[in-house]
Length: 127
Image (cartoon, rainbow, N blue to C red):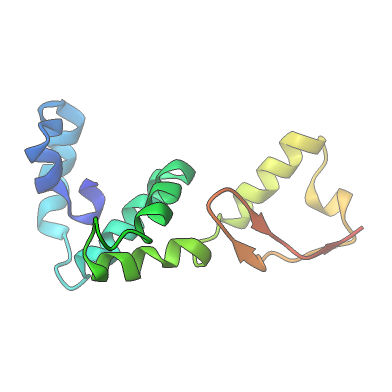
């Protein structure tokens, strides 16, 4: 939250009473970009918090009776436009699951994903 400029929200929730958050809020406050819309920052925060929070954002994107339409439009991007996981993380997961690297398992493996979603992403590969 603090990294995306929501330090005041963390403060109002009483979360900054914890020393690491208080220090992070102090460090991040002057660097917060007011040029980035709050809706975009909220989406980025949900993406960074992981799959569960992305799912919450996806559900909220359909609820214009609960959140403003501008937030709903931005959160709709969580349906099919999630920031992909870095390829290095993909390699680590493949190695952990199969005991071999991507280059050993596949003849080809595209580093760029075809799609990314809240709980997975798709890469083109050939055996």
